[in-house]
Length: 161
Length: 161
DNA sequence: GCAGAGTTACTCGGATAGTTCTTGTCCGAGTGTGTTCGG
DNA sequence: CCGAACACACTCGGACAAGAACTATCCGAGTAACTCTGC
Image (cartoon, rainbow over all chains, first blue to last red; front, side, top):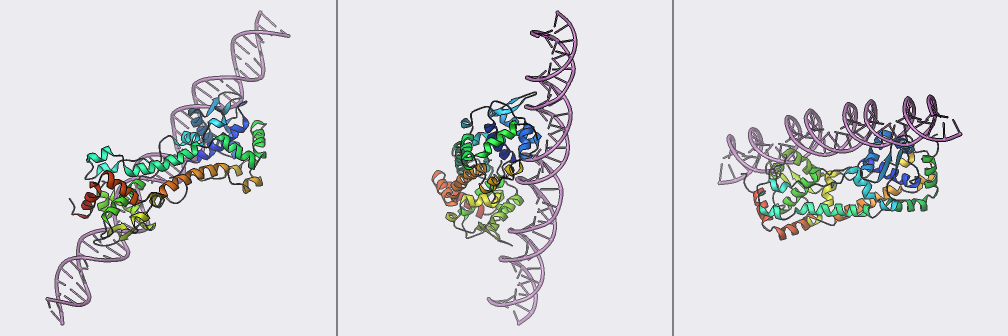
């Protein structure tokens, strides 16, 4: 079980976009250059975020991406699900129905005990991610490294090197 | 992010082994036949469980697998980690160090805020899985479908069809 | 009848291909900007 | 000098390959039971 690297890219990029603000759009190329990432692939992640309504995109000159909602309204779970897809990591394939007692009606009435246990764990995971927003991350960084947001904004909105 | 199907196989198989008991070993072929699974691939999963000390293997005639510990001593997390590996799903690759301000010493002193948030969520997930054991699953099934454990044991230990 | 060595058949164990999903790349459609021409 | 039409350059967006991980399979090493022979 491995989470896509795109999730890490998307989370950092959303936080960066929060610091830039919604006054101007930042291109995928610029956002990628900030971390030396592949521009085309980060663009792909941003498209997924746009489909999920987390960022909004603008075409043409002076185009790019910006946050579509306030940072307080964007949870980490929103971003993770936008990249990874909404399906749970564990998917019960009901193998118990394939055995010699598979056609037992008990199997169809009661949910699979194992699937239930795994689903509970995944619910805990999602709840924790849902409870944290981009604004919360911002608050932590503002406290621990106050210089970062300002200079990030400056680099992303300023002229290229 | 998708969990291996082998996890589902391993969980069901461990529960079945708990019902069989440790008096006799069950071959991978027999365990696979119970759910119409690929025998060789389930064998691979059982090998992983053996390496993790969850089951013990016996070679030769009358050989096979049996639980190496009491069901109360086997958590669901033990099984999941045995199959999926111990590494977390989210792995911070420290992309913040690759940007224009990457060599900022602040980055090295403070842990990455995003990685911390994702790790917390994953810790919740693991805690939930750690808190449930094979014995707990057994108790639920004994309550909801009391006939299942006995007849499963009978099929696995009895003669082939 | 009993003990022991040899044979046999059965099991796990790791090395070997096939398939799906993730990662990475490319080029085309669409759009807003800047320019230029005419009034 | 002002307005509008035009051409342009820039951006996103989805379609197209490469690589990695998961899935599935096969055959060999090892082992314990069974058999047969000799005492």
